[in-house]
Length: 118
Image 1: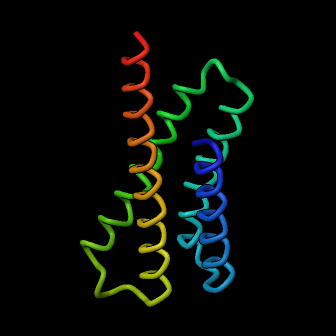
Image 2: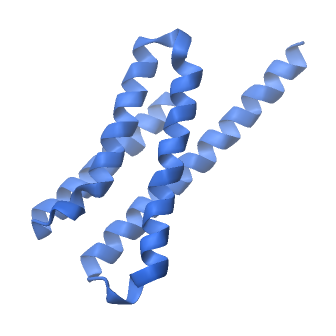
């Protein structure tokens, strides 16, 4: 799960950075901020194996919030967004929602495996 989390983090950073280069708007960096938070949690979970479970749960919370923010923005003002803003919001929503779903599935599988071992 670490590789997936770090890969999505790098994709979010690239999405935000690319959008910022194109638009020069500071709000275009929002996906990059979420990506940096995920990357920090991923790197910390590599460094601190004992705290990996807690750090990955924190990463799933960041992914959930990273999916809810663009979903709310799209629900409120999708018709008023520029094509770039619409693309960035849809990309961030897709990446964060996919990561969250994968993390929840991983956590459930780990719990079932742990319960079967007992």
